[in-house]
Image: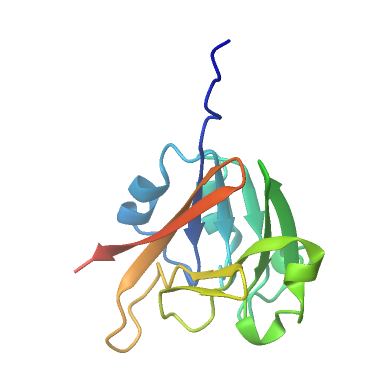
Length: 160
């Protein structure tokens, strides 16, 4: 009997677009199986441009106000293969003990600082800001590659 390897899932990560969806971000997300936007979208047009690429999971950021954003949740949880992902805009709003709930990955935004760090068996990923440059921080996005229960995260600088 031949064992088949599970197909991997590519989850694009984007945050803090602040009304600006760069062509470099769209190119980075092309071909993803799903996209997570970790907030500070700032208008519906950004979501409308992302929706044809892949299914979206979106959370509301502190700058997402008005009628268009009222139905966007403050946090979301999704399961991809055997990996549970928790999404929230600000890391300060992450509940304690997510590991006890089976969460393997936490995706946040808000700080505009790209980050990948593992704490107590939970992978924390902030894709940084894909929108307007802030201070000297890079313009960036991220990607999760999930195969079964295994997950890898990477970050990509979108503009120099």
